[in-house]
Length: 410
Image 1 (cartoon, rainbow, N blue to C red):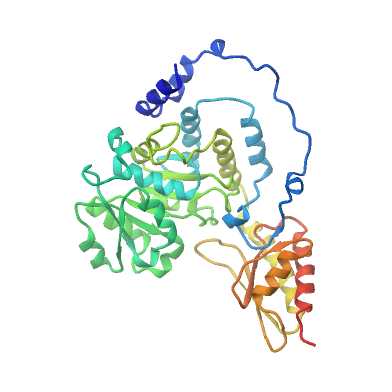
Image 2 (spheres, rainbow, N blue to C red; image 1 turned 180 degrees about the horizontal axis):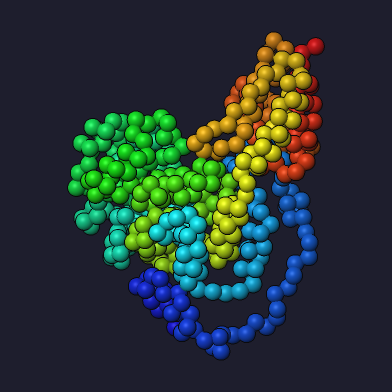
C-alpha cells in the first residue's frame, strides 16, 4: 500500500490500527541492515553549551516542566525499540487509563492545549469526516460557532478552543448564561484553577449544560494533586476534561490527556494523527509518549501524596529558615488549593536593609553556580520544592542565604 493510499485509508477508518496491522506482513518488511547501536554516554547539555539549573520554581513549560520518574523513562526506552500501529496503541492505552480515571474514554494528546483543541473539534464535527476537514472554517458548514465561558475564566490558553474556529461568549451570572444559550452554542467551557473567581460553580455549570443539551468542558491542566481530581470531573459529568502530562503527573512534557464521553473522544480522534487534512495533524504524539503517559498515571495514583506533601514542606521550610536568617528578609509559606497544589515560599524585603530588588536577586541566583531558577515579581522571590531533587533543598538554602547576605546594606 502506497503512503498516499495508506493515509487515505486511515482517514476513513479512524480506529483501525489492529486490522491494518494484520494486513502488513513482517515478511514484506525490509530487514534492518544493522542492529540499533547503543549510544555512548554523553553530557549533551554540556556538549551544546546549554545552561542547566536547579528548579526551585515549579513545573513551568519554559523551564521544561518536570522530571519523569524512572518507570516512565523505562517505558519510553522500551517503546523506542519496537513498532506498532498508532491507533491500536491509543485504543489499548486509552482503555487502561479510562479505568484509572473513571472516564468513558481517554486518549493521550500532545499536551493539555492540544487536548482542548481536539476535544472542541470533536464536539463540533461529531463523526462526520467532511466536517473534520472543514475546520477551522465554520461558516456555511452547519457546525456551531460559540462557546460560553465565565469572564473570570478568560485566559490566554482559551485560544486552544478558538483555534477550531469558534468564538468565546463571556458571561458572569446564571441569568446571563441562560440568555447566552442559543442554537449556535457548541459548548460551555470551565476553568477549574479560577473557579473561586466565578459566580457559577462546577456542579451548577454541568447541570445547566445537561438541562439545555449543551456539552460542558473543563481545563484542569495543572490541577493535581489531589489525585482525586483525575476522576472527580469525569464523575461529575463534564463531557471532556483536559489535563497536562508534564506537570505533577511527571509524564512527558509534550503529552497530556483528553478524558470524557466515549463518542466525543472517538470524534476528537478523527482530528488526530495519523489522519491528515485535519487541524490536529501537527499535534502528533508518538508511541514513546503514549506509553510514558500511561505509566506516569499508573505511578501517580500509587503515591502517598500526603506524605510527599510533608517532604515538600520540610524542604521548603529549610529554605525559608535560611532566608529568614538574613536581616531585612520576610517570608510566608502558603499552599494553593485549586492548582499547582504544593507548599510555596514567598520572600519579600525591607528595602531599608536590602539593597537589591527581588528581580535582581533572582538574576543573581540564576547567574550563580549552581544556577537556580525561581519566580516572582520586581519585589519578591517565589520558590517551591516541587521540582527539587533530593539534597537540592540544602544547596538552594545555602546559595539563597549567600545571595541575600550580599545585598544587606552595611
